[in-house]
Amino acid sequence: MKQKLLLIFMLLFTVNSVQLSAQWMPTSGPYPQDVKKVVQRGLYLYALTDSFSETRITYSSNGGFSWKNLYSSVGLSFNSIGAKGGVIMTCNDTDVYRSNNHGLTWLKCSSNLKTISQNATINSLQMFGNTAYVLTTNGVYKSVDNGSSWIMLNSSWSTNVLSLAVSDSTIYVGTKTNGIYRSLNGGQSWNNYYAGVLLDVNALTIFDGKVFAGTKTGLYYSLNDGVVWTLSNITNDISSFCIKNIDIFASCSDGGGVLKYTSDTTFAWQPVNTGLANTIVNSLAVSDTFLYAATADRVWKRPLNQLIFYNILLTANPPNGGILNGSGSFPYGTEKDVIATPYPNWEFKEWTENGTVVLLDSMFSIVLYDDLNWTANFNLVNGIENNNVENSVQVYPNPTQDQVILKTNANWKGKQFIVLDRMGKVVGEGIIENETTPISLQGFAPGHYFIHVANEFRQGFKILKK
Image (tube, rainbow, N blue to C red):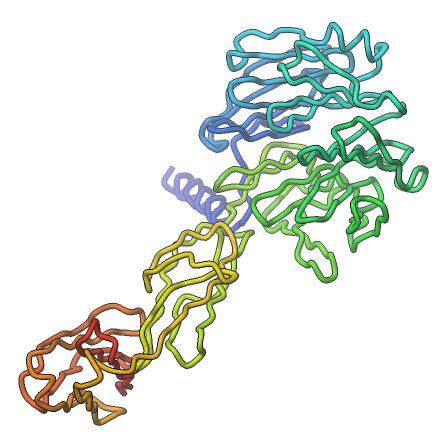
């Protein structure tokens, strides 16, 4: 019996060790289900599954730790789901449904949609802000009142629509055989590009002045508003895109897993599949802390701080005005201290970004959700309190072991000095009582320190403790 318990413990330890070391982690479900789509809104994660002729809409309020059923139907297959606020919308081939009470009751809301679309087959439903869009075999329809009424966007053309991307009044539509349509005025007029060339455009997104299109044969990008398209380094079947701040991800339904966009120079993507046991990924969703992948067996998740890194780039103006601490590349959500410490005879003035003043404090903490590129501006100090006071100060020996001598003249008596480490933290202080003041550095770690004296501590000296 003890041997069996020991074996079970070892197996559990092994499984937990694998899960802890894996960067992608399985949620508890919905399992075992083919998850067609996952959507994240507020506190909730919604999943649409289809398995054994049964469609289910489930949700999780704890990041996938547990799942609860919202709706299930035998023989009625749903193909998409969207959510905004307290409203959930879903659709099958013929109808759109809405719930205003988190799935307790459902209302069919596609009566006039059937009329104006001439009973076209519904491919999917997407939600952008307060607007719902239905993509059908003969065009695009939108509703701004949660599906109570619908209008057609493509009165000048008719084709099988598979994907959509919206940014303000700009709309891109991906089709099965007619390439990509673009409207710059909310659907009033359209231009068509790459008809018969770009086929099966399953996903579209607008990102940082570029447009990306995911097809069955690869991932394309356009740098000129959809007029010209170029194939990237990816030839997988792309099923969806997902954007978080300044990063973009793509999913592959052919076993390619999850991709991350890595270069604005080569427009390249790379897989980020470490630990992802099922790489057939149908869609992606993102929260403030996790990227979620809807796969052929369940929803998986991966911490964003393993996937997204932001840069802190600090510049001193002038370069000899001071030392800056905090530069580097750091994971998403990292809290970082940034410090500007002036060199001797200099004082910190302000932080600027692209010439605009953003902060007057020399030290601040920031949680990274974007890149930071700031300049620390310093002023040269030409005196201690006024030009009539002799400001002769010396600090020696430098480098030193355990002590330095602060040598001044009578004008400095009674003034304060402080000792700062490289992070700008005060590690020592005192009052100048004589023309020679010993300052002990015993117990200090080796490295650079700064001794500042009087007049807002603008007069300073950089020393090295061995």
